[in-house]
Image (cartoon, rainbow, N blue to C red; front, side, top):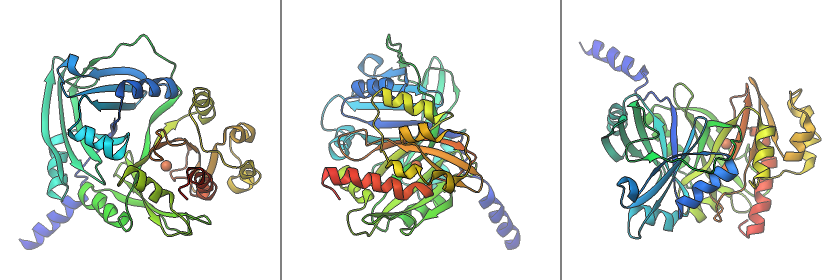
Length: 376
Ligand code: FE2
């Protein structure tokens, strides 16, 4: 009997107890959601999707959902002081609050994760309107960041109950952004491994890649990183912690200005990075630029690639290769005045890694920016 239950216990640990269909949306708490939504439409090519606020029966906040292909961003602002959203913004500035994950069963997702030690943010809640039902639940992760579990298989409305469709006269063209490739968290000193264990134990993720401070260090600053992935690879969360260097780590600068742990960058996938980045630049998105000497040895380092080097060089797009192929990537400057959240634009051509070969050139570019801010 005891043997049988041991076998069953083993079998059950091999089942994915938290099947995820991908990122459902990313919600940002911001000081002025109306203007933030406008910025993401104008600069990044998102389209108006849905709105919630006093006019839709939500009295304490306004939320704007925007969409581009499979990417959905929500910008939420409080209408008064003295509440959790206002306090979040006062402490952190504008930043990512919710990394919402699409599930088939939000009740099971909450039960499976909380029984493995997750701290509940929201017990499963059913909401309805004339378009059907959404079930959502949530757990806390690093800092004040939350993972929501969204079950929307019985919902056909624009976004979710509480929202109404947002029809705008202003509909700028998309920029070719497709979906969330990965979301990176910055955590405090010695906190990377505890959070790796959280994603392993509580969410059933695996550590698929690790970088230590030998991989990721420049003359001055260093960081360590481990990439966590769910079973089907649709959801990837690299976790960074600062490492000792001669001067302040970029992760430490983030932790100082965000006043705690939080989401450092969201990587957005495109199928044509040259066109996407050309478009984003023309709309005013600012990118980190590496010295043109980066391109002198590029072909030796990565071999033959489909793209011409010249446009990559003009735009500052980085290239790296792994065993399975190559990838092209570029990073924006922080999108707020605090040096906190930024975006990565990434095009994968077979590679499943994260651009390790670019870390040095990239971090030197980040350090030049840190230096300009007086934070190195
Ligand atoms: Fe990244």
